[in-house]
Image 1 (cartoon, rainbow, N blue to C red):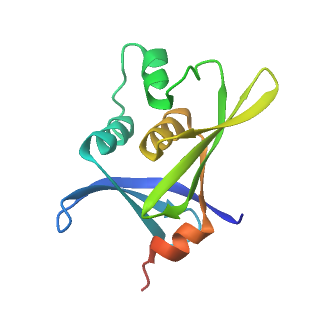
Image 2: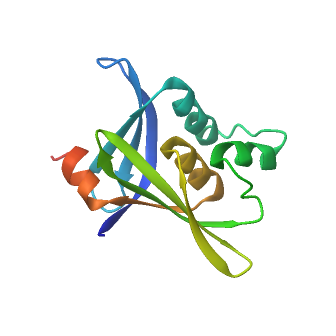
Image 3: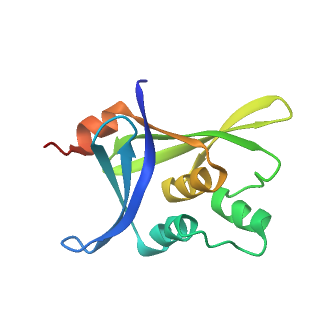
Length: 136
């Protein structure tokens, strides 16, 4: 699977659609990918971007990942191409010298990646199917 490394560019309300979107930008080009989601999921990522911290970070990360990831190092987040218009994400974690991956909601995976300064890769097919390129 060929992938592109991205950063979180912004979280915005798409007024014409009335939906929230996380905008991912490919690091080396002006290519963008919009991932639409509900307001509560978008708020999770927005809070991370503005630096809002929760009093119990371990509990918060457990809530995001759906399991205890506090003792694990987050190596990478991989966002897979769309299936019926929905994106899927995987966390690639290491703990005690062992690597493992787990499925995670896209918004939570992106929030964890930003929180832990982990790399984010997106399947190249997703850019082909849903990405936009800005040109001069």
